[in-house]
Image (cartoon, rainbow, N blue to C red; front, side, top):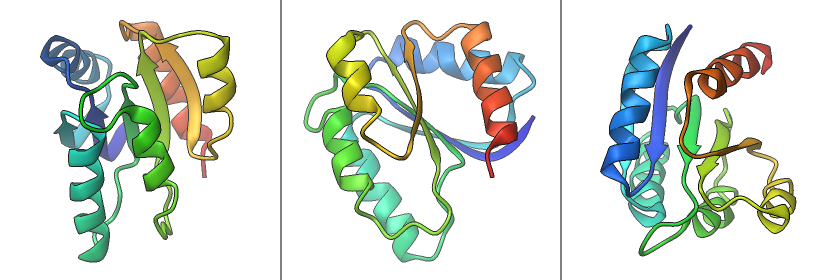
Amino acid sequence: MKKDTVCIIDDDPICVYGTKILLNHNNFMSADILVYEDGDEALTNLTAQLNKGQQMPDIILLDLNMPIMDGWGFLDEFSKLPLKNKPQVYIVSSMYGENEMKRAKEYELVRDFITKPLISKNLNDIITMSKTAV
């Protein structure tokens, strides 16, 4: 599967490293993998890209529990941006419960909620879902 850009927003370097390995070993050859340690850093950089006329990532893998700006704060602000091509957001978090699942469904951009750690089967599901998205 070829995607132009995958964005990982997660403050855990071990999870980021593992996700990169999974991406490279599951035929998810990406031209670019962006990594941000918190929602604020991601929002700042992605907004700058948008303002320069650059395209948004195709897929965003988003953790919820991060310092400075958590995943919910990122989603609140990112959803307000005037996006022509909306990325598919997959929440990848250890915070998994009925409240989180219900809240995730409130965001149009969120395609699925995956419990950490991300494993090959989850990544293959993401690949399958991204093929069907228009």
